[in-house]
View (spheres, rainbow, N blue to C red):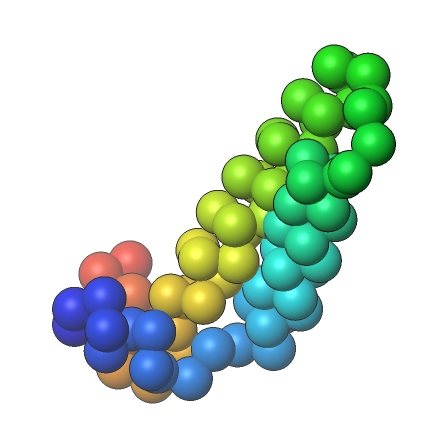
Length: 79
C-alpha cells in the first residue's frame, strides 16, 4: 500500500481526533510565529515548535489506516 492509498483509506476515530488536535496545534503555532507584534524569542520559538509538532501529528494520524486485512495480518504474525 503506497502513501496515497494510505491517505485515502479509512482512518480510525482515535486518529481522527489526534489529527484535529494536530491541526489546531499547527494553526496556533503558525499564528504565534506570524504575529504582527514583536514577541519574546521564547514565545516565537515555542510557536515554531508547536507548528512543527502539529504538522507531524496530523500527517502521521492521517496515514494511519484501519482495515481488516491489516488486523488479520498482525494477528497471524503474532501466532
